[in-house]
Length: 185
Image 1 (cartoon, rainbow, N blue to C red):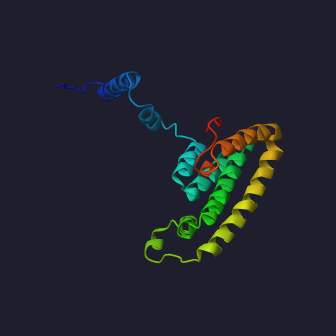
Image 2 (cartoon, rainbow, N blue to C red):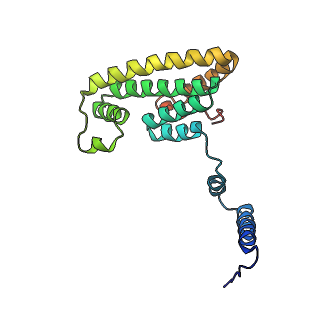
Image 3 (cartoon, helix red, strand yellow):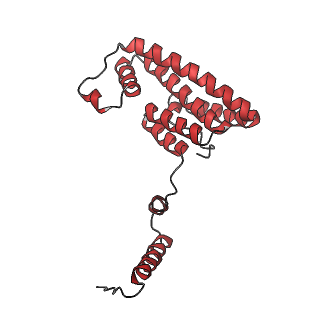
């Protein structure tokens, strides 16, 4: 058992000792996520969007992309937002083609809600109407963000779009739950 006696300037000494111990632990294989979380170096919004997309949580994926656009506007952030809108659009089309209307309705509710009141007063909507409403909005927002990305850095957009086209071709029935592995986010 260790006993640390705090004397003159002891609190500063204890703090330094704690930092040394924690640093030694991190250098010996502690998970980098712990170190990252403690230093305040948070994951980017686009990295979070990737996880939300993998989970099929389009609501939070779009929110994360919008946060990235607000905080660090760039062609890449607008392009990522465009991609998420297109993924949402294609996933809805896939659900409709495979006659999965309950999932369409659940997706609509996921996009429209997210407040605690929805547990006691859920909004109801017909699935086919929900599909049309969400798809039209996603397509419109996709066109807007794609145009903004092109205005900022068209050559980069062309390169990233080639990568996402190849990704879609490799994963025709599930591309909407992920991003191209070449993308750095």
